[in-house]
Image (spheres, rainbow, N blue to C red):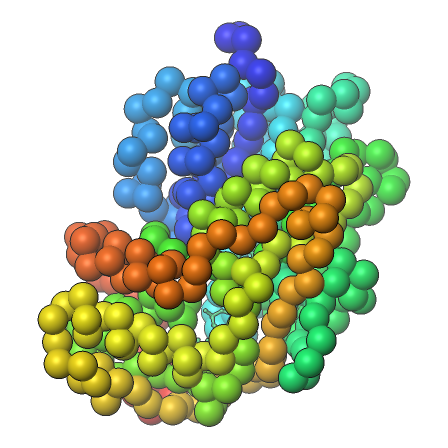
Length: 355
Ligand code: NAD
Ligand code: TYD
């Protein structure tokens, strides 16, 4: 086996955040081997990884984390010493429609990975199991306050319940077996390569197609938006400097009402496509609210700032512009992911919302 300094298994590396992480680690650390294990569900796409697919320190394995033998074989074949675990079912609306896959992938899949690490690693020297989680495990805030790493878990959606369960298993393996784990809980990510089921790329796609822009309820729910590349730098920081057994919040310090985000996207897209200012805003529709819609998420990120020296760098306006520009420049990608299954998904989800 070649003498790589780390042999990292990235799960879910063909998805949105995972593909940015793969690109970051493959390019920044040629001395690390990066093995990407991904099932290529509707959310996974090898087009996201074209620029790294021929790099000498990169390998792709198509496989399902819910299958223990597949996972164990990857550990054995590549001598994995580090895991960065992204693979998940990640969309709240889909979890409301059908929670089962969320339990399978997010809970059972995570436990499989923990078991594979526990049985493959004879000692824990130089090993890390890094679990990627979300701020949604903390529940929902009112108009004030922020989630800290001490906030008790109170997940509300099937998605956040499954992520909370997986976080608990990761911590249980630390306390019970001493597995060297670390967890980070991030706020809402946005940027290139995000599947257009999530708010920002869905709105960009609908503006480009001149379709109605569905805003749930009154559009007053608040999310804390984090540019995906800032998140990946945060993950790099936690991997290299984080303390085992600890949790770190990674947020954008950037709270916005949904309606504000949608209006900003309309303005930027009108400007970048040369449309008449105000044209796209006419497409906004207030539609039936999401069941159990969490009101507000906001993360206190003092711990990662003070202890590890990471902070978000991308200004929201600049991040949104980069994102819109990427979707405009990558029509082929967008056409590819919005053909086929996506059309059925959109029909199912939005017809009964009246759009
Ligand atoms: P995504 O849905 O874009 O990608 C998920 C990836 O996992 C896809 O490539 C998919 O093919 C793969 N996958 C799904 N089931 C699998 C299975 N059984 N076996 C192997 N691979 C499988 O998700 P994302 O938005 O990139 O999120 C990645 C991680 O970050 C998730 O764990 C999510 O909970 C967490 N997270 C996301 C956000 C966000 O705003 N998107 C915020 C905080 C945390
Ligand atoms: P989403 O991108 O699904 O992320 P999450 O639910 O994990 O925060 O949604 C972000 C916010 O946007 C959330 O408050 C729900 C809202 N939303 C809409 O108003 N319309 C939509 O079509 C979608 C997908 C989301």
